[in-house]
Every structure is written in C-alpha cells, then in structure tokens.
Image (cartoon, rainbow, N blue to C red; front, side, top):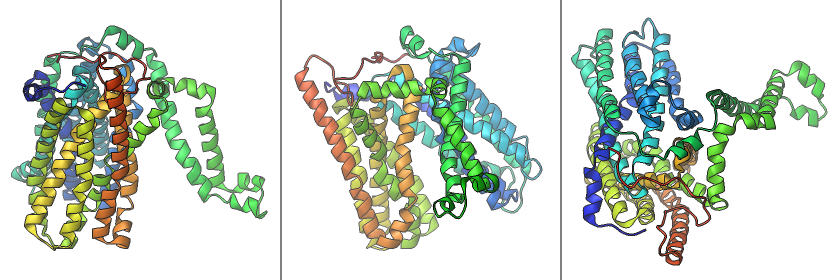
Length: 530
C-alpha cells in the first residue's frame, strides 16, 4: 500500500465525515452510561437494594450479543424510513427509540414503578446497541481502510465526551435539580433524563443531514437475499442455540448421570426422578434441532456472513481470528486489577479519579488521534504492531510503580503512557477490523469480529484476581506484558505476508490483512459521501 503525505493524513480530520462521526459518537456514548452507572446511582438514591441493582446491570447483555440481530441491518431495508437508505434508516430509528426511551425512563419513579423503569431501560439498551451496529457499518462504507482509524478517533472523541457528560455531568445536573445525598427527589432525576433525551437531537439531525454511503446497488442486493421472516427466524434459532448449548452442559453437570456409570441408577430412573437430567435431555433435543439440516437452513442469514469470511480467507482465517482474539489481551487483563492496584498501593480515591479522568481521557483521545494520522501516513499493519507493542510494554511501568509506593508523578506518567498506547492500539485495531470485512455484510461481520476481540480477554480477566494473589502485582504485570508477545508474532506474520504480496504484485494495491486467495469484495469508497 503506497504511503501518503502528512498533509493527506491531516486532511482526513478536516473531512465532513470526521465531523459526522464526532457527532454520531456523541449520540452513541450517551445512552450506554445512562442505562448503566448513572442508572445505578439513581436506583441507589431511591433506596433500591444492591442485589436488584446488580441484576439490573444485566441490561448490558444487549451490547454483548448485538451481533445476534446485526444481520437484520445488512439484509432488511426498513419500510417508510428506508427512503433514507439502508444505513441511515436504521440509525434514525435507533436514535428515535433511544430518545423516546430516555424520556420514557423519566416517567417512572423506581420507588413505585421499578419494573417499568427497567423495562424501558432494556429498550434503550437494545436501541443503543442497534445504533452501534449501524454506526460501525456506516463508518466502514464511507471511506477506505486507511481512513478508518482517523474516523474511529473522531467517533471515540465524541463517545468519550458523551460518557463523561452522561456520568459526572448527569450526577451534577441531578444534584443541581435538588436530589442530594439522602434527600432523594424523583422530579430531579426525571428532569435529568428528559434533558439527556434532548441531547440525542444533534445525532439525529446528523443522520438526516449526511448522505447514504455509496455502496453499489448490486452489493446491497447480494446482501439482501433473505426475506424478513427468514431473518427473524434465524435470530430466534440462534438465540435458542445460544441458550440451549451452555444450559445443556450445566444441567448435565448437576444431574446424577455419574450414577449410571457406577451402576447406582439407570437411565430410566434419571428420566423419571432427576429433573436436571430431564432438562439436559430437553436442551439436547433443542440443540440437535438447531444444528440439523432444517435448523441450519433457518440459520442461513446468520451463517452466510460467517461462511463468506471463511471462504475469503480460508486457512488464514484461523491466524486472523487468533490475532483478533488476543490483540487487546495485555491491557484488558491488566485493566481489571488496575483500580484495585491503585488503592492497594495507597493512592486516595481523589488522586485516582483526577488522574484517570483527566490524564487518562486526554491521553486516550490523543493516542487515537495520533494513531489515525500514522495509519494514513504509513499503513495499518505497522501501526497495529506498534500499538500492540506499546500496550504490552506499558504494563512494565505498572510493575515499576508497584515497587515505588504511592508516587503520584509516576502514577501520572504510567496512566498517561498506558492510555496513550491504548488509544493508539484501538485506532489501529478498528482500521484492521474494517479492512477484513466484506461490504455486503459489514454490519454482521464487524459486530462478530469486535465480539471475538473481547471474549478471550474478558474470560482470562476473570482470573486476574487469582493471578495477583498467587504472583503478586509485579509478576502479574510482567505476565500480562508477556501475554502480548504471541499477538506481535501473528502481526509480524501478516505484515511479512503483505510485503511479499506487494513485492510480487507491484501494480496491485495492497489490502492489509487480505490474502492473495481472497475472493473479491465490493469496492470501498475513495471519497466521503457528505
């Protein structure tokens, strides 16, 4: 891929697309916080039990499983709103639902109508997750791969500003309206959520102002090969499969099936008396039905984007998935214990909050912005490698800090370096994921790949506390730094493959991460649509 000048790199941030992504990022960041941390504060002030608040946090599953219904956004054009285009229609619908949902939350006092409040919050979460799917697909389709990091940096800036406003800003507004400490005042919180519902208006106006991405009509027609009924059935079958498979193993574990092998009971006894075994049997039947030829035909709208990815990348899909699954592992696993580490080291809550909020936010946005420039200038894979190396190496700063005690200057330097490298790595990773997607299935494939990115790091992060107990902080940070080495090897493998392909085909523009055997994709736009 040919390098570009610094002037061309900076020009990416001056495009109308950059402004659009900034405003759309703001619209995406507001609802996520308002149905999580801010809602938790509201519920607690209203006297809701901690256990109930914990259960309410399961609203976040909407974001974790947004890939389940993402094929609908690729393959179904909305009626009436569909005149806006495939992407803008879904954006407008989701933003309207978020605004209406936030206003609806203001109608219910958790002291008297908690169930209704949570139900409306679930609606907001699903609408917000749908907005995220549509936004990612829109970003993928308005610019070429090297511009994706810069657009993602603009999106991240708007997103982070909105998160700060919807968290600390919302609490400040609610307190200003009169809900202070033990003096809970429902109208204050209602007014706050009504105000933030109005703040969705800039995002909606941006959606109506910007143009639909110039994706060829034949590409859209190829993606929309299934009817709405088939798409809805595929989502339903996938949900049943996602529930039945883990439940099948859970019920088998709790059943008395081990007694069959020791001749203490028979299968007939289990069927008649063991409820866990009966549930295991039911979930097994559901799983078999979902995986049968009939079930696979029902899953076709979901499986088609996955099979497209495998057919394009063939054996190399394993390498790509390995890279995606491990890229953010170093900082994600370390991040689970970061705040606990600060407290254990002796820093005050005020010091932690001020440094992480101020320096952390500024350096994250700066890292993302620099990453966008570097990728336009030098290409994706070199900066992807640099981001992975920096994210792993900054964990060594935490190891150094663990031996220095509550040194505030070192804390500022460590958090600044860690957040800068995290912003740089995120920008590079977004650009890389964007380069792997097929525009026919951009919403589905990006949602799937981004979910894979979080799966393994989150699972391993669950054992981070055990690792700290057994290793101590210094060795824990050293181990998390070493976790990043396999990812760097995989990036090096991809980088070498790209350079060999470029040298052997000098007249063919390189597409980072795309093997020579890949099937042709729909062309990506070379100019912004606004």
